[in-house]
Every structure is written in C-alpha cells, then in structure tokens.
Image (cartoon, rainbow, N blue to C red; front, side):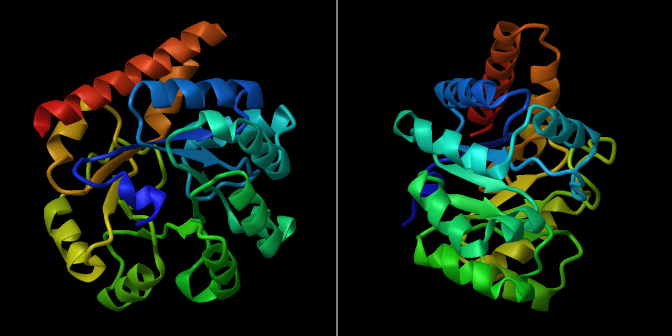
Length: 264
C-alpha cells in the first residue's frame, strides 16, 4: 500500500488543493504546515500555469499570482524538497502536461521522488497518451491519480482505473473547478456506484464544486474522500495579512473536518 492509499484506510480523508507559490513559496510552506496541523490528510499543490483549462477563475487567479511572484515548477519542487522532513502528509502535484514536458518527464519523476512527493495529477493528459510518463512515475513509486467525470464511458472507465493509483479523482459535475452554482451532480450516488464497480479497491476521491460543510454533509456517504480547492483558496484570500490568511485556512479546514466527523 502506498502513502496516499494508506490515508484512505479506516477513514474518509480530506484532500485540499492550494496553488504552489501563491502568493509566495514561503507562504505555501506555511500553509502546508497549517493544513496538516488542522487535520488535512493529503495536500495537492498546483503547478502554476498560464492557461489552466480545467480550472475556474479562483484557481486561475491563484496561478497568475504565483507566476507573477516568479514561481516555477523547478522552484516549487526545490521548496518541497527543502521542507520534506517537516511534512507528514502525502503531497500531490497537480498541473498541466506542458509544464512536465518542458521539465522533462524522466527528470520530473526523479526530482519529485527525491523531494518526497507521493503523487501527480495531470488533468489534460489522456490515459492513452501518457505511457512514457506513467513508466517513469512507476519507476520512482509515484502515484498517478487520474480523473473521471459523470460522462466517462464504461470502456474509458476501465482504461483509466487500470492505470490510476493512489486514488481515483471523481469530478462531481461537468465544468471547471470552483463552479458551485451547479450544486453537486444530481446522479451522484449512481455515478459513483458505476465507477466503484470498475475501480474495485481503488479509493474514490470526489472534487469540483464542494464549497463548505453543508455540501460535505450531503455527499460524504458516497465517495471515499473529499477534495476541496477553490473554496479554500477563497477563504485564504479574504485575509488581509499573512496571519489572517493562515487563520482563515485553519478555520475553513477545521469546519470541514468537523462536518465530516459528524456525518461518520
């Protein structure tokens, strides 16, 4: 069992996303410590990118702030490498294939392994076009977490789940991250039951549009874990100072964790 899958043992883990380097790599380090102290089980770090197609405006703006601050994939990996002894929870990099391709697939897998990163999510890389990267990640014991959506066909589902490891990222509804106006996908229970039949023992994480404790309570029974990104970034950004931002992150996560405990 790898480090990510272990977080799904005997509990519903909370997975949170922050954009690496937003507003600085130093603040990213502090946020990682704060999130893990408040009980986050897995932390996704976004790789800043100029055109994040799967993301809504909140994460797009976070990515722009990180780029403006000079954050690069190389600097983000170096920061994680520097602090890995203080990080107890699994870290997952989430970003777009162009960043990895420019870095070099083999070099990317090697460097993130040395930095103690446990997994990777590449939303824009189809299952049938990722063979080389997958091999490099597997060589270094890095989980490649893949995404499925409500309209993923049964055949495609088989292909994706066969090559995903750590957990399977189930998108709650069609659209971009942070789009909470749709509510949660109305056929959620049936959707996740269909995915589970194919995924077998691979844990299911549910994300996109989950914006607070009330929504968590409504959907907690269906997936194995909850993924929250845009709503957390929004909460952080309401702070005017670094201390307020960290407090906001802690309070937001604490409320989500409490809602998850109450429903279990």
